[in-house]
Amino acid sequence: MDATTSGTPTVQYHNIPDQPITAIVAAPVSAFLRQVRHCFGDSTPGEFPLAANPSIVLHVLTTCNLDPQDLAKLEATCSFFRQPANFAPDYELSISELAALDMCQRRAIFKPMTDEERQSLKHRCGGSWKLVLRFLLAGEACCRREKSQAIAGPGHSIAVTSSGAVYSFGSNSSGQLGHGNTEEDWRPQQIRSLQGIRIIQAAAGAGRTMLISDAGRVYAFGKDSFGEAEYGVQGTKLVTTPQPVESLKDIFVVQAAIGNFFTAVLSREGRVYTFSWGKDSKLGHKTEPNDVEPQPLLGALENIPVVQIAAGYCYLLCLACQPSGMSVYSVGCGLGGKLGHGSRTDEKYPRLIEQFQLLNLQPMVVAAGAWHAAVVGRDGRVCTWGWGRYGCLGHGNEDCESVPKVVEALSDVKAVHVATGDYTTFVVSDDGDVYSFGCGESASLGHNTAGEGQQGNRHANVLSPELVMSLKQVNERVVQISLTNSIYWNAHTFALTESGKLYAFGAGDKGQLGIELANNQTERGNPERVDIDLN
Image 1 (spheres, rainbow, N blue to C red):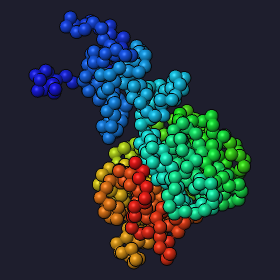
Image 2 (cartoon, rainbow, N blue to C red; image 1 turned 60 degrees about the vertical axis):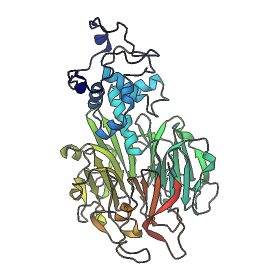
Image 3 (cartoon, one colour; image 1 turned 120 degrees about the vertical axis):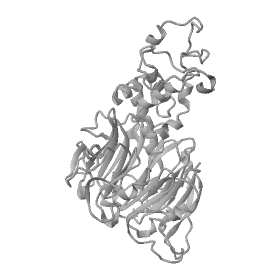
Image 4 (cartoon, helix red, strand yellow; image 1 turned 90 degrees about the vertical axis):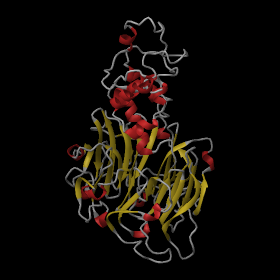
């Protein structure tokens, strides 16, 4: 019952300070209140002061500095105050810290942690369970962990269902489909050897695939290399079925990113490791070209937790979670200004991109294209920078930008997701609309005003963001876009809807669309449904 309708005076809780449990328990108790107040263990719930009032929850979440959309999804929050908790009391924690710890324990990545690992993560995040909660939620939001996803790789594709099953299709010359052979196949086929293993993340590179299970194990197949094998450094051995990466067995991995010359993985604790960067461009550690042992990324991020990594052509972006807020670090090749530091010089160690502070923008999602990069801020603004060829930055021209610049053409759009490829960018709004701009080769932008048998403007370059009307016509909210991020392959694009439907368009010459094309077709200009239900 609402306090106003019941006649009970409204109490404002937004200025409640954090108090230790001991301070509350030790307070004098009115005669009409029960002397025993249970809030832990298997005791009867609902007998803790203010337990039923959601204002405490609002105080907790406000202190966590979470996005309102995330708050609406945390229905379990209030249950802390009306149901038995599953951990022993800690009388040194404030109410908001207790609630944050309770919510952390409901996250899939946090659950299997030992007490020692949890305390280590707490220390790494800044000494607060509220900061740990923000770290966990940020990683889930930007990487779609525990949710369905589609990966448009170079010539082949990977689709992961919400239950953790994996389908692959397209080019298979190196066994990158994981079916035990090297036969190309346009039909999405489940990787049977993974039955019993739940996959939560996938990454696709040229001729190779990496999958990550909910237990933090990494499985790789295709070219037996952690770098790009086009250059002949490695890749002579083919692995045609998923095999666990033994060098990563002691690291609980939650994300992988495959770039040119290197692969990066992100651990559960927010540490970044890289493999085989190459002899000329060491990435924050000393390695040789044939070194495939994971090496921790040194420098500024050694003691800062990272929630997302994104790899482009010879560079890496890291979305970091600090007590002061979210930030982005970049390392690697600075050609075209893609590192975002105002110059084109290389960086051997991660360096903070300072421009976001000047723009008063809190980064929430980061994307690394081959030559340009993009970020979505908490307020829905989109920033792009790097090589602006074909209009991939969305600023109405082809100029390079060496620091992040807000895409003014999207000022009336609140973005929630961004994807980048080889001179191509896609933006998804909070209402599920999709905008694209950049290179129109292979019809991968989705702008096709003519019929399927006609050319129309499907290959035209787009200098400013345009609404993808062909996706608007599917009459369903789009939640994720994935597009090919390689300079060596024609691009194709996936659009994943809220209900788990997958639509594909762009290059399909190797079967990477998951759609059978006619003999004279090599691409699809209009989105077509792929026969997989990812939910």
